[in-house]
Amino acid sequence: MKKLGTSNNIMKGQHTLRPNSVATRLKSVGKLSVNKEHKRLIKTELRNHRKMLMPHPTLDAAFTQNDVCNAIKKTKINKAAGFDGIYSEFFKFAGPGTHTWLTMFYNDIIDTAKLPKQFKRAKVIALLKPGKDGHEAADYRPISLLSVTYKILERMILERIQPYIEDVIPIEQAGFREYRGCEEQVLALTTLIESGFQRKFKTSVAFIDLSAAYDTVWRDGLLNKFAKVTPCKKLFTLLDRMLTNRHFKVFLGNKENNWRTILNGLPQGSVLAPTLFNLYIHDLPVTKGPKFQYADDIAIAYQSTDLEDGGKALTEDLSTMNKYFSKWRLKPNPTKTEVCAFHLNNKKAREELKVTFQGVQLKHNFTPKYLGITLDRTLTFKEHLVKTGKKVRSRVNLIQKLASTGWGASAKTLRTAALALTYSADEYGAQVWCKCVIVHTWKQLTHNCIA
Image (cartoon, rainbow, N blue to C red):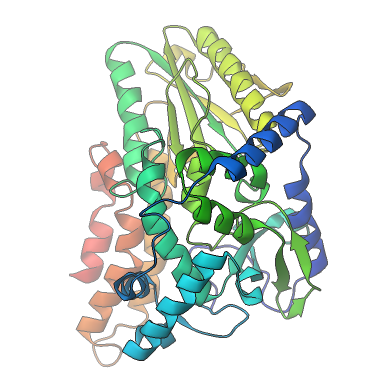
């Protein structure tokens, strides 16, 4: 059955693109040019870190059986296995003998910094992005299926390094952090916009798009930042080995390519990848307007009384950001980066911001989508609620096919299905748009469904 809410018509086995094309693109995005002087500087600093880093009393301490059990407890079930074919359920239901063996196994890895070959092999599943036709390699999102045994090791390492990394990540970064989320970040942006309404300010916002953000992470640059934050020689050496000479195969439908080697980037599907990416961009430059970040989704807002001033400020901020991106080998996409102006001046409702980025005038989108919520100039959220209503209605119709007075699923099953299928879409971002004036026109839809 086609995934609910998607419009892709390419079914399994009908892919016209070869896996080699996706693999070639995956390798190429990690080979972006870098400033030679900056590269030499980072290489020199890395050599110094390798010489100067010392053992740490807690970071490189031996893992305990309790550490292993806690990591296994946090590992999700019903997930695909890596090339070793071991599923997470094997460890979930294993006994104390297995936990004891794993503890010795992981301690040997952290002591020697030597990883089994299977730990550095990834099965990359190319998933078609929503709304794409699948004729180009960029239309696919590569998801790496890694060894579950390796991911348990990653989780234990994450428990140790996260407090050190959290200390340097700025407050505006909400991605993959405890007690933070997408909805909170959208609420922070809309709160700033609404405060501008009260002061008769116009809020100009640029929504930056980074192409293949995780895949373009420069390994040496990441290791350099990691060494500055986490003062542990063993973990530094182990992370270096984990990120060096990784091998992968791309699977597209029922096709696969030959083994490829990749030197840069972070695998999507890795436990450590989100936190390491946050560390990689933790030192974004200061801009005139405040930044709102969720992993690689970055928005810059600037408030002024005149849209022309807002456009000039955003152009300057984007130029500052572009220097940083170029320095650290990140690849912004000016054709997908958008701007929007939020204000209550109806006379200037159709006026567009004039903002340039990398010599390209950015598209002004009157209804930009940020972290899954469609915004508009006056924050009525009308278009967002219309889209959500259509999505919920299609799911309600599906559930109603299973209901009848004489046959069909039980009331309990229907209620569970309604809660799972409709409420996830219906309530997303409710704290952002719940007070808008048109909510009452459609809010009864899901309530009637589960009544």
